[in-house]
Each structure stands twice: as C-alpha cells, then as structure tokens.
Image (cartoon, rainbow, N blue to C red):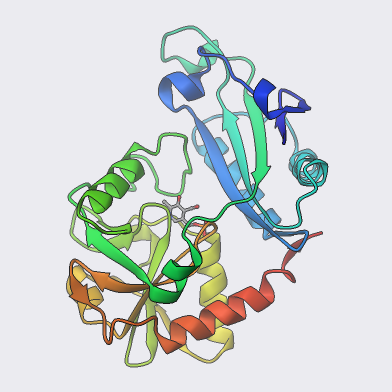
Length: 287
Ligand code: PLP
C-alpha cells in the first residue's frame, strides 16, 4: 500500500509523522473522507471545497492548490490500483515547538491514504442499526463551527463510546438545547407520513455531502423533503429513520434508545433512496 506524505508516495511502513506535529500534539489540522466507486471519485469537488473551507476557518494554509490536491488524490488511488476505496485526506499544522502557537509550524503536512473500507458488515445494512442518545453534546456553532472537519474529533469519539457502551451501534447526538443534530460521523433523517426531515445545519450538524446528495435525490424522486428541527420524541415515533455519510452511505436505523422504529425493519423509502444513491455514485464525480 502506498501513502502520499511529504510530497511523495511512500510505502505504508514508511508513512510516519513527527511527534512534534501539532496534528498529533493538539489535533491541529483538518481532514476529509472521500469514496471511490468503480474508479470514480465521488463528489471530489465538494470534498475539496469543504477541506479548503475548514482550513481557511482555522487559518491553516494548505501547501497545494485544489488542482494539485486533486491530482495527488487521483495518483494515490491509481498507485494502489483501487477501483473502489475510501480516501482519507489529512492536513496537519505540521511539526513545531511544544507550545500551542501554530505560527511555530511553518510546514503543514498533507497525507492521503486510500484503502478498502467496510464500516459495518452487510448484515447490519440488511437488518438496520441501533442508536442510543448520549449525554455529550454537539459543540456549539458559535464556539467551533461543526462545519470545520478538524482533527480534534474527541466529541465525536466520546459519543461513539457512549453509544457503544449503551449497547448501540451508533450515537444520536443532540445540541445544547436538546434538538437532534447528527450521529458521531453521519447525518440523520427521519420520515413521517411520507415526508422526509433532516435537521438544518445551523442546529449543529456538519453539512454532509451525502446528506446533500440525499436531499437532492429525495426531491428528484418527488418526496416532500424538509430541513426542520426535531427532537428525540420525533425520532422515536418516526415511520423510518436512517443515517447518511461518506463511510456508511445510507443505512437504516431500526431501534433508538430501545424504542423499535415502526416494524423494526429498514423502511421502504430508505431503501428507495439507497438504491437511487447507489445508481448515481458512479456518475457524479471525477474519473
Ligand atoms: N457528521 C460528521 C460529524 C462527520 O464527520 C461526517 C463525515 O464526514 C458526516 C456528518 C457525514 O458527512 P459526509 O456525508 O460529507 O461524509
């Protein structure tokens, strides 16, 4: 396996970063997760836009142009001879002194990893996920914007831990007012009486690229699609619930806080959206 690091493709064993890298010391950096479907890099432009916006927000200079990063990503996928893959792009502040001050770090580091990824086994897609709501809240948008995909993912890690400790696959994360925001690394949708709802991003959800794709697909298929706030109660009494994300794609949720959702099976509309999503993934991206 080949990994892009410090301007070149190196073998996996040689892909190591300094212990003085502020990405390691402080979680100072940004990242993206991207999928390749049949050699097609899905929504690459949208992912690069978000990567550069995350970097801009934390005053991190990515040492390549978008076109250069695009080529680096394509080269990494090709070098690893991957037709289908998960790509991780990481930009860290780079090595510096032990102090927090990012101006110590003059050499931001870019890493691109491309490999196979299966987040959940096939049975979980067929049977559906269980969720548990957690005490840890989504960080407030006025503190650190949830739109920044920073290397500091402790909040998301803690919610995942809490959910797993409660015996659930995934977390249901609320904001500080108790409105549903998202999962640990995925957006949430609920369906009631044929209408599809997802929280508006201002409540504290990342504007997921899969989320936006599903909103478009839902509208194209003629469903009523609304971005509106909802609470745990609305999730408990929904007809269908599902999560979206680059890693999970579209995955049904069949149980939330031990309430069985509807008949406890992945829902019809969820399956319809998933099959349409799968049809489109090879069409919408960069070859
Ligand atoms: N929410 C969070 C916190 C995430 O980290 C991710 C993953 O990127 C998502 C949602 C889903 O976003 P996307 O569909 O762009 O992968």
